[in-house]
Length: 131
Image 1 (cartoon, rainbow, N blue to C red):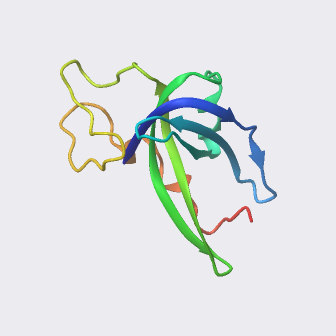
Image 2 (tube, one colour):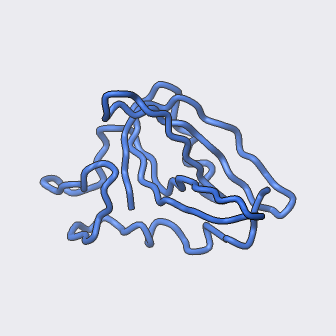
């Protein structure tokens, strides 16, 4: 599990493919480093409506997984979002701490559900490619 925070720069429309696969992309501009970075994330299938309540320019915190695959001799990397929330909202109990942005969490002692609990294993079907 990885996390980052920034401002919403762009929110795309839901894309549907002939196979029945759906995805929606969005871009978050981070300012954690000296130079701001525009990071493109995607949500798939039933998670596409997660972006509906957000507006451009809004500060958000994104929880995501890094996905990589090969298709026809080319390699692709996707940042697969499984949770997005307005910055400043906390789902953790008071006094709880989150791992630093971009760091992988190895253990969780809070009552917050894990990444595996929030996303189904069928959310990312490597057999279906929209390309």
